[in-house]
Length: 488
Image 1 (tube, rainbow, N blue to C red):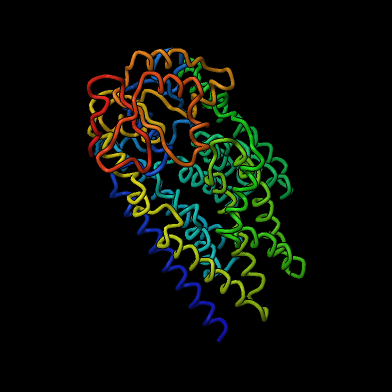
Image 2 (cartoon, one colour):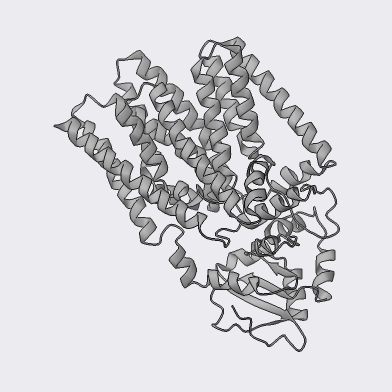
């Protein structure tokens, strides 16, 4: 009876989480407007790549003043779709959605490889796919889903035949693709797999993997530096060294605990149940998973950086799901075995309900706060636009993005970029419209220097809108048209 109840609970949760994720994916893929701050710059970078331009320009003394924060693998992956469908967010969101679905499949295979049952492997997929971070970010035009997929593929290849040199080479190549999709994977995945080979008494395999990964990443870095004329180092390293804020990290981890407590409970639970296990294979696989989880905390700590978000919890979300599968497996024959599926059911219900209660990025919320109407207004303007939120408007219209407020403001404050050329453009009233997000107020301080705001206040007038400004303030240069409402 207990096994039947457990099976019913997990399969119901699986159906619910799958339907919710596909619902989110359908909404994102059918929406032509920007849904998140970082989507706009990526669309611009893809458009520049399509035109054969260098997206890591070494000289930022002249416009456009933009930063390419990530390596180019994700951008290159969506180029064929972009060439087929034209400019927009669809190509990147499609790549992310497919990558997330493939990661779910790889999670199932990896859990089975670690001797979890089919049902418990499905439970791991449920915990991963219903996570608020995956529901929100797994369908966006962001690099994280594809980077995680490459990392997980590397884990699978390493586990398949740990002593075979060909599979070690394949794992090293997959790891290199992960780090050239997102830089943080240059730490977590290579460190884990090197330790995995070493602790598995395969010292030669650890050496092979480390050397091959180093060679692949080195050759890739040389090629990238050559292509960018040396600009890649500034964009990928210097421009990403933002200030850290411990209160920001504590708030992010509090968000993790409040939204997805099972993600942190699962590793602790696995530690406890492994202490009472008498099966050596379970202990070995459990140590593998706990090591993966421990290393996943390294990129998660980077959430303390100013400008970071919950996408730094991606690897931790995957590792926690794997811990949950093994925890369910170890406790399968015990009296309290049904407790874990019940916890999973409670959390899955919480996550799914949060989508419909508007706690996770919801299209009705964006409509209510005026986000979509703000985008529609800017689409109707023909002149140059300066915006701290809707940076995808210009690339969608076939125009280059001229300025990335957050990235360039952080560089200006660090003394790594002179803002004088931009201030001169503002003083010359070059932009037809400048858009500044209203809330939260801390965002304004992160995205604009006092000098920029002063120049805007001196040379631009706050323009009215046809339905009132709910999400952002709109500024037009002083002149006959400065008091004309900006219509949708």
